[in-house]
Structure formats: C-alpha cells, structure tokens
Length: 318
Image (tube, rainbow, N blue to C red; front, side, top):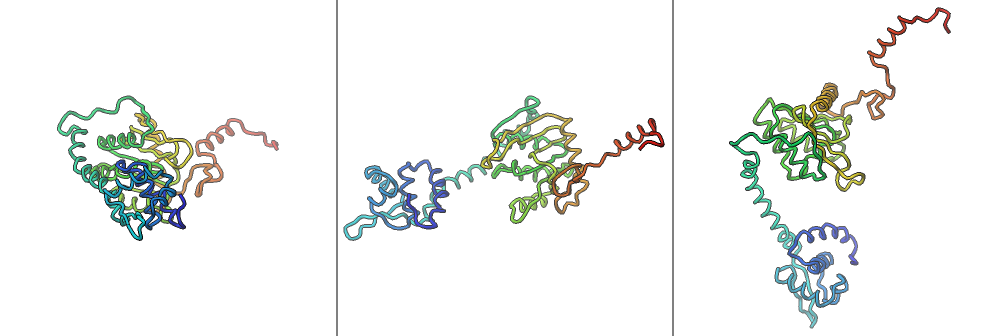
C-alpha cells in the first residue's frame, strides 16, 4: 500500500490493533486501515486500488464499516466518496471490549484465586516431580506465583528479573502482599544495572517501596528465582523477539543447587552498598570490575608452602 510520507510509521501498530478485532473481516481491516492512514475521502475505485480489493468485496466492507459508524459517505458533485470517522472515536471503540475484559478479570481474580489456593481447605499440593520444563511464559509465571504463595522464608531473584515480571502477571502484587503479611518473609534481587531511561529503574523503585531489597550486579546472567533455598526457576535461552535460542523455563526441586546459588548471592550481596552495580571479584572475570588476573587462593598457597617444606630445594639450585 502506497502510504504518504511519515504516516507509514503508524501502519504497523494500526494493523496490529485492527487484527485484534475479530469482528472485522480481512477486507474490513484493509479498507479501514487505508482510510485512516490516508486521512481523506476516497472514491471506491481509489480504495480498490489502494487495498487490492475487488469492487464487490469492497462495497461489502464499506457497508459493514458504515453500520458500525467507522465510515461515512460523502456525496459531492455526483461522486460518492468514503471517509473514516474521527480516529479517536474508532480507536476508543476498538479498545472498549478490552476495557470490559480487564474489568471482568479484575472482578474475577479474587474468587478464582481463592478457589485455586483452596482457601480454608487442605494444603495445596506441591509441584509434581523434581523437574519440569515449559516453553510458555504463562506457565512459568504460574509456577512462580504458586511457589511464592507457599514460600515461608526467602525468595531470591538473580539476573534479569524482567523474565518474570510480564505485564498483568500480578507478580509485583504477590510479592507486595507476602511482604505485608509477614516481616519475616524476605525478597532479595540481584539484577543487572540500569542505564539511562531504562524503565526497570522505576520498577525497582516501586519494589523497594514495597519492601523488596534490590541491588545491582552483573554477576548473574541466566534469569533465576530461588524459593526457600529449595525450588529453582530458570529461564534458558532468549526472550521472545530477541533472536537466538527460544526460551525454555525450568522448575527444579534441588536444595543443594539452590543453597549453592543462595551462598553465591550472599557473597555478592555482602560486597554491595545497595546504591549501584556490584564490582565483581570473581577471579579471571573479564567484566568491568572483575579481576583480570587469577591470584591463587589462600588454600592453594598453603598447600604449596607445605610441599616446599617437605621437599626443600638444594641451596645451590638455580
């Protein structure tokens, strides 16, 4: 479609929005897109050429759009032209079903959560099996909410936390609610530093105000959550749209590995003042702040000293 000048930039978003309305036929969407982006009245033949739609299908689409109030006919000088309604009216009309759905979801969340969590009933069953995997971010977030809901001690987020905080997933609200109910429940986040206008900065501020401890570190790469030093959630691969390997989410019942990661987290945490990125002290770490050289550990130096005392070199040894 030949779109004038900078109006081309609006085309992808508009096309996506129109595709979400399943009440619009493919012809309806093409005609409405063309009218909105060109912003002027057009004849049927102009619309046919602009949308690649034959006249029979075009008139059917125009009739349907006119009944919905999206299109008006302009009969001037013996020629009938078609113009879109005001864009604000069309956009708000397209968004109305989503608003109703959001309101219904808000009303349904509390009772459905009580059913899911068996409020007043027997304890919720633990996740089946020591390991599970999924390619669905929705399923992974559901695992996380269930584990946080049953947690009794501490939750650690290591690496890029955005893998777990999908819009509308209620993870923020769940963490805030758990902190409100118990001061003994701790949430610690060691996450990559923010730069510039990174929206994560505002998110971290909201979490901090809710009682979540957030500190910065580049030490951990794979997005990981550790619950009660037992349960592990790990995202392996790239997030959607970032290329690379597709994401796979893993859930592991592994106290040993969980404790090792928590210990590493405490080590990094103890070297952070909470005001910015942690400087890594991992031997041989090539990242900023890491040691470019790998000095021997104290245990290794002690072992070398012991070997020298047992096998002293001759005095004339070169």
